[in-house]
Image (cartoon, rainbow, N blue to C red; front, side, top):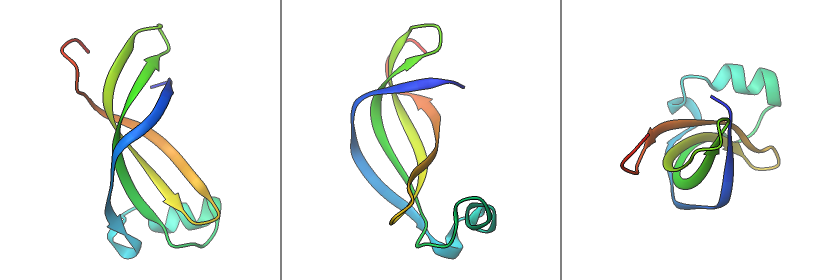
Length: 80
């Protein structure tokens, strides 16, 4: 799903680190070695059709690599 993050990501939380990430070997192959973390947070997003929503998003992050592969896990406002 294509979307754009508007503003800051709030309530950020790390919920998997290192070997706790199922996709670790793929991340290392694509982006290189690092201390990979799987994180989540809340953000206001704009979908490809122009609709604006508040959503929980997940992504992977490593020091020196930045944030990679954002995905929407669920919409938090009333109308998805």
